[in-house]
Amino acid sequence: MMTHEDLLRYVDGRPVTLSSDPGKRVYGERLLNIGGKEYREWSPHRSKLSAYLCLGGKCFPFTGSGNILYLGAASGTTASHLSDIAVSGRICCVEISQRSFRDLVDVCASRKNMMPILGDAAVPDGYAFAADDIDVVYQDVAQKGQADMLADNMDRFSARYGMVSIKARSEDVTAPPERIFEKARERLIERGMKILDMRSLEPFEKAHAMIVVEALR
Ligand SMILES: C[S@@+](CC[C@H](N)C(=O)[O-])C[C@H]1O[C@@H](n2cnc3c(N)ncnc32)[C@H](O)[C@@H]1O
Image 1 (spheres, rainbow, N blue to C red):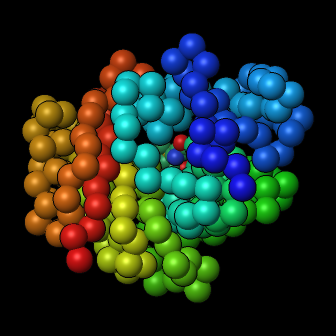
Image 2 (cartoon, rainbow, N blue to C red):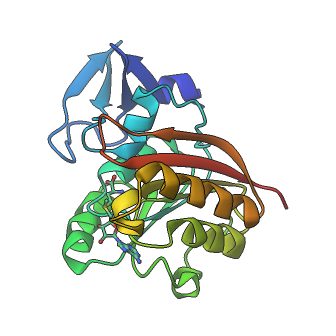
């Protein structure tokens, strides 16, 4: 069994993941040979989860065997790196846009632990058939009400950990981002979550913050 350190490493302060689909790029990322193994550079400019790690984020609930519910998978950029890490787990990738979903299906085709689901993250019952035994819910849908959407999905699937990238402008274009992030934090506490970390994703993502929670149930 690979250790976590083998699956996710840092090169010059930037994360890289051990490719589970050697020779293939998902979004034009650099491929690196480290000790005879192929790693994929995880760009903080293309992935908020990589930005979180590059900015010193340490709360990383993803393991080699955990199951992940990924809401807002788009064309699979970040999800493909989680697929490299959760080698014996499963990543249920929910995406609402048919256009992005077509690209997502291509990425999932050569990664046996990634499952594409065309669905709406606001309606968890719509994909409950595919998402059982979930350990972590990761959410990046860039729409209003992200804190409640995360909590609803964590409750629905009894997930212990949650991670959400809050986009301030999607919640309210007029309010200062810090106030929006604080409201999201308070809402998650009201919903029975313990806040493990909250940090701005600037300068990689303007007016975005990552919040990591653990369910207190
Ligand atoms: C910022 S992009 C996600 C980027 C992706 N997480 C990554 O890092 O590779 C947001 C995605 O969420 C999707 N989305 C928006 N609302 C959604 C919903 N209610 N359910 C599922 N996906 C949704 C959008 O279609 C878009 O592809």
